Length: 104
Image (cartoon, rainbow, N blue to C red; front, side):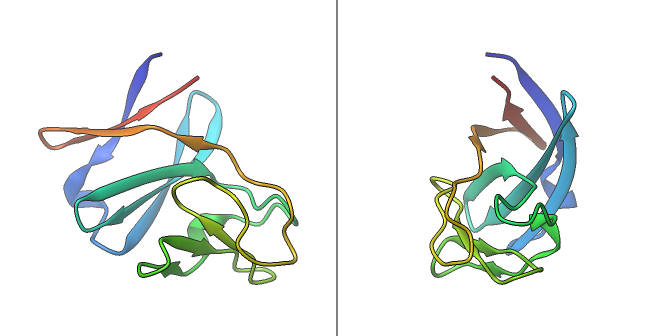
C-alpha cells in the first residue's frame, strides 16, 4: 500500500490534529505523545469534520464537534452516541521529519 507524506512532525503539536487530503480523501491526523493516528475526517453520524473536535488524550479518542460523539483513535469505533458506525482508520508512519499516511 502506498504511503503519502501529509505533513512534517512540527506541523502537528502534541495533543493536536490536522485535517489533510490524502488521495482525494479527507483525513484527520492526530498526534499524542509518541503516537500518531489517522482517521476519516467525517463523523459517521452527521458528517461534521472531526478535525474541528476536541481530542481526549487519556481516552485516545476524538470528539465530533457537532453532536459530541466520541471515536476511538485506534479503531475508529464510536465510543458514545449518537454515532453508531465507525469511521475508517489509516496507518501512520513517521520517517525523520515526515508524517506519512498509508492509503488503501
